[in-house]
Image (cartoon, rainbow, N blue to C red; front, top):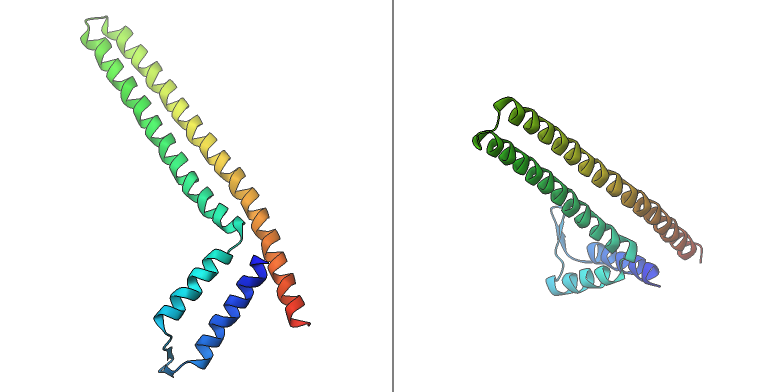
Length: 148
């Protein structure tokens, strides 16, 4: 029902554009009527589109967190390496340990980022399939409307 409702709302918008006063390719539409129609269209959007928006926000947040975690790990590793040198240990040992820690931190950061991208790709792939199903349903509904 919401999908069909969305099609009807789009048709209503098209009628507004055709039936209202136009000048130089611009159409004058009552602002309140347009805002009401937009609100109705938002409410009629399929859940998959709302989920797509949520997934996009979550993907960005997850990637940002992964990058921040990677930066934090690198900072800690660098601070630890500096502390080892300052604490009067043998300089060569401190440098080796620092290199190992930084290398490990970089590997961890790369893995975190790779995992985040893989997770995001998986979610987006599922979302894409869901949206394709939704588009097929919308097209079928429009065809049914046109053939009635």
